[in-house]
Length: 473
Ligand SMILES: *Cc1c(COP(=O)(O)O)cnc(C)c1O
Image (cartoon, rainbow, N blue to C red):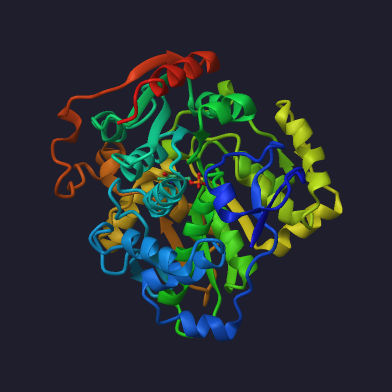
């Protein structure tokens, strides 16, 4: 399996060569040249596999240049019932027949991002150890990527993490998860701005090819293909858990921001998983819903990005969306390049009325939005009706998912975080705090370690230079 850029300017590369990089050198995103095809017969064979076995089957089709025994070992060490606090890793919770929640948030930071990030941590360490190289990870987080990356990379040899987060925009719990880490290879940078400012700095640094090479900059943001590959696994696992035979179809409801999670669902569907609908849910930041309703993709400026009570979806430039458009155009890199010429200048594109817009429906996407009131009402309703407490992001997914629910088609709503991460909203919905999992009781009172900076690329670069010139731990 080799990887090409969505903008056509990268010679095909192997998995290990794109693993440590961020954007391709032409500003595009890495994509596999073709998708592996999973036949109905193979689906039947996979139905009985454990999470670890299934993960190996799927990831090995993308990571073809890692020796099989090594990959099996890495996958086995990553998806342990102990780390994910559950025998099934991603247990399916049935609310009523045909309505399910797929539990993706039992990892160390209590959000679905652990599933991809824990694998990434082990893959990075493995690859770096082979070459004796180091990697400085520069990331941006709106709340869940940061903790997840830091917990996956802390104490790992050859790795440092520089994580940008919008100051004061995350929940106290999320902030404490990151800032309380005292590991010397972890650097928290609180940016005076919103998430998109943080993401823009990461992009600007990644686009400075010289700097990126000299300071060995890598990324863990959702544009990293290995994260998408890891996330494909639970679409299969959820499908098997909710069906009896591989002739059945299911629909997935996905709380979305950067389009990373649902992109994995799109790839699973392209590989042959019988997915009827991919239901994309946004919060008040409805850029993606606007596209799937109207054909117009208009990323918003920072000032137009609203801070909401599902903050991990406060995103108005969906970095993985380009991957879907690449497939939509029939993998026409020239067309993608043309469309993003406008987007990269702060503009928009509109497919309405074009043949491409007609094709969108063939990919199974539908969309809807949620807002604070709907989110709180959904948390309350699901709690009263089914005795299940969900977090605000999962509630957005459930809210929109229910609007598209069809008789006879199992609906699987992806749980993207646990309620304890967002207790302010839970209290508002049900009048009391969610119970805390063991080990998280005093999180917010632990000492915190971070620096504050303006939304200034040069300042961030200078900090990276300063820290990386110290002797490695
Ligand atoms: C990251 C995140 C999302 C959005 O996922 P994308 O892959 O960015 O679309 C939704 N909910 C939670 C809790 C998250 O952490």
